[in-house]
Image 1 (spheres, rainbow, N blue to C red):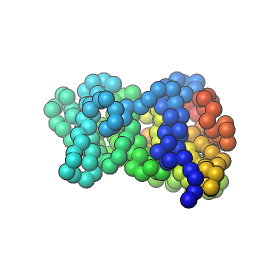
Image 2 (spheres, helix red, strand yellow):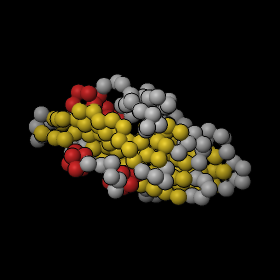
Image 3 (cartoon, helix red, strand yellow):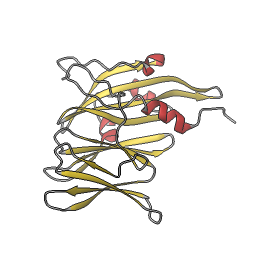
Image 4 (cartoon, helix red, strand yellow):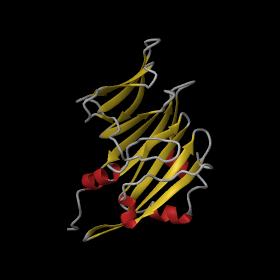
Length: 217
C-alpha cells in the first residue's frame, strides 16, 4: 500500500495557506481562517452591509446534507443558494453583491463557485472559467493534472476583483507527495484572469503574500 499522508491532512496544509487579508499593494491570503460551514461555530454569516445573511442548514435525511440559504433582511425573502455534501468556505465581497463558495466536495478535490447576489442571482464556476482563460499555459495544465490539486478563492482585492489560487502536487508515490506548486490569479468579475504569482517547491509553502504590480491592481 502507498504510504501517504491522509488526504484530508494534505488538504488542510494547502488550505491553511489560503485565507484572506487584502490590501492594494499586496495580499496575504493565508493570514486568518475563512468562515466555514458546517464545522464552524457559526450557522449564519451576515453580509458586510448587513442587508443579507447566509444561513447554513444541516440535514440527516437529505442529500446533499447541507444547504446554504440567502436571507434578504430588507424584504424577508429567503432563497436556496447552494447545497453541498462535505464542507465549504464562504467569502462575501466587500460590496455585499457577491459570494464565493469554496466547496471541498472530496478529500482530494475542490471547486469554487461565484454567486452574484445583485442585481440578479447568477452562478459561475471559477475553476471552469479559469480553464477557458488565456492566463492558463500548457505547463499549468500539466500541473493541474497532478494529485491532489485544490482550487479556492482566497480573498477580494475590491468589490469586483478576487484572488483565486490553484495549489497541489505534481507527483504522488510510495514516499508521499512531491513537487508542490501554487498559482495565484486575479479575477475581474465579468472580465478575465491575470496570473499574479507562481510558487514552486518549498517556496510554495513560504509565508509571504504574492506581490501585485500597479498594472494588476
